[in-house]
Image 1 (cartoon, one colour):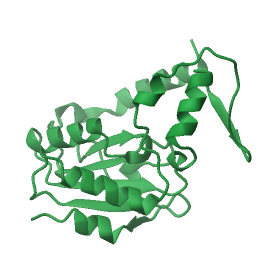
Image 2: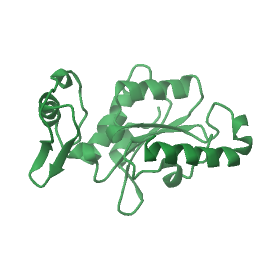
Image 3: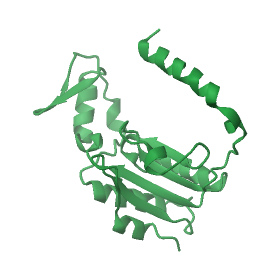
Length: 193
C-alpha cells in the first residue's frame, strides 16, 4: 500500500471518530449557494468562504472553468437541490495560465507520462507512446485571469438551462493573501434579471 493511501485511510478513521451527527445533514446545501472554482490544492473553499459540511456545493475543475460538466453540476444544484446564488472563483498564479491548447496537445502527442516545466517551458520526461486525442478537447486555458472569469460567468448566464433570476458572482482568489477580489464586470454580467 502506498504511503499516501495509508495516510488517507488513517485520516479517514480519525474523521469517522469525530463524524457525529453529520450523517443527518440534508442533501440540499443549507446556505443555498454553489461555488465553481479551481482544483488547485492551495485553494480551500471551506476556509476562504467560511463553509462547514452541508453548507454549499463546491464544483472544482482545472481553472474553475465553466465547462459543460461544470454547468451540468450547477444546473442540478439549482434545479434539484435549491441553490439560489452561484460564485465563479478563479485564482492568481493558476497553472492554466502556464500553457496553451497547442502546448498540451504537443505534450500528449509526445508522451502520456507527466511533463515538467522550467524557465524555458514545458518538456516531456519520456518517449512515447503518446496520443493525438487531446486535439479533440478544449483545454480552456487562461491567458487573462479577469477576462476568463467574465467569460465563464457569461457562458453560464447565457446557457439555455440556467434561469435568469439566479445571480452569478465573479471573483479571483489571491493565493498570496487569501483575499477574494471581485471582478465587477463579471458580477455585473451575472446579475439576476
